[in-house]
Length: 95
Image (cartoon, rainbow, N blue to C red; front, side, top):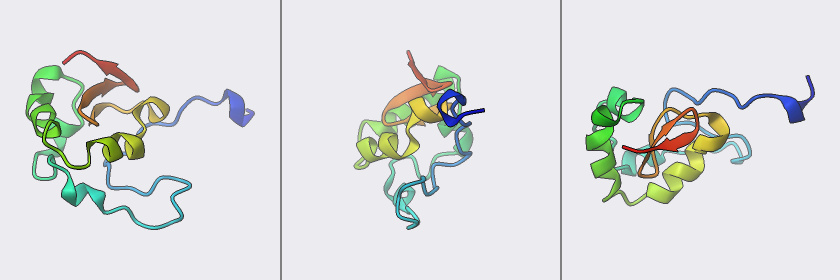
């Protein structure tokens, strides 16, 4: 199948990854994230009530914009919290 007709790939299971085109360096940005000490299941949930604590942390996060840029929820069909929003299948949902 040509690359232009391929579906987006599933999101990584953790935001601690190196995206393609990043020059190969490891991005250790998650340690600075306000959600770093929160349970992963609350970061990668699809359920608004389970995401509440992470969304509150995002409001004070110093890397909120970088988080969304690296995770790129719309391209990866991400499920969970990134950049201060809850995402389901790469689309922002009301939380």
